[in-house]
Image (cartoon, rainbow, N blue to C red; front, top):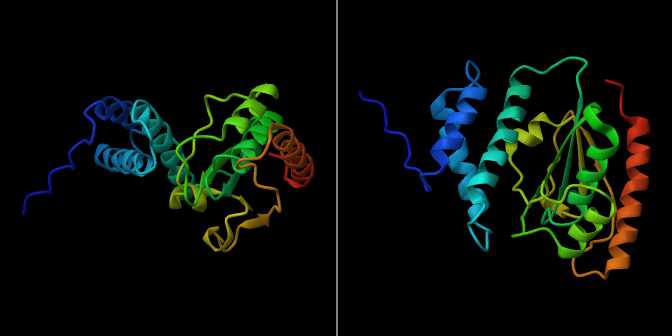
Length: 211
């Protein structure tokens, strides 16, 4: 029986990213696995995209994160960086602030991810402004869907307001932070939310094991 043909690219430009990712993970994942995951990432992001200008770039970034997480679950590193996943409903506010703040403060000590159970089309404008004010990279912030690979790879899953849709992973450190929602909030309120999250990150960093 002949093998099934690979799925067609939803955008032909994805083939270039697939070649890069396959080369990076040569010996870990087949080119077919990379292609399928990249197409899936593209389609997941396209579900909520208002414009598709940057979808190819974002799909490659999301796939790279998923492949890294999948490689970690297959061969967990000992004594490496702690992996922390922040989850909220739309991945447009709280989880973006938390991920950016933790990545900035922890450096290579922590691998940080964020995702949403129902991702928005873009990061909240006031959240983007507060990230800029804090000297944090706005270009790295984009709403991402919650995928199984990233959940399974996380040592700590920290949820913020996603209710019953939040993942609970047996054997993981699971925290739920009661943080106000910045959706539609005035700028000063978003700054206060940032400060609340930053204080919680101080406590989290004190509790995390050393690499």
